[in-house]
Length: 164
Image 1 (cartoon, helix red, strand yellow):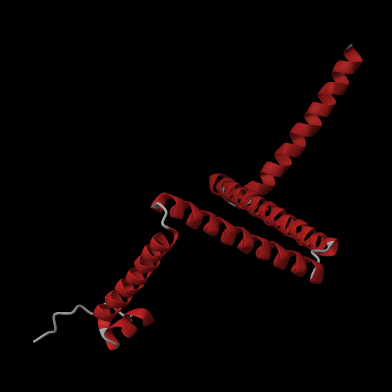
Image 2 (cartoon, helix red, strand yellow):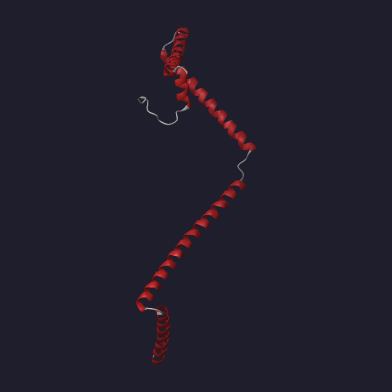
């Protein structure tokens, strides 16, 4: 008989830890303990100061803001320190620009190659069509005809000039 639990691949570390040591019950108990501790602290603060909750909340908010500000300042200092140690120099930017230009050029060359290949394929197809229409040597005949037409145009122009 099969087990009821579906097998869903590898389990995460956290899941394994939960199941090995007391499972979810342990986790729930820990969370409840933390909540109880927090509530106790709040209660003590209330009794100590003899004030309303609203004022306490205000103080907690201000404390949180202060902590947040301190963290941000620390981050900023760290950033500045790293900036001094490893300045983001112009050379790095220059190198990046250079490689970007090179990449753009390569892309353009690839596009041009693709276009040229397409043109070549079209020309070959047209040449095959001509050959099929006129039999063998049709391609040569076509070239000869073009030459003849060009010469006729030239001579026609000359004659018109003479007449004019």
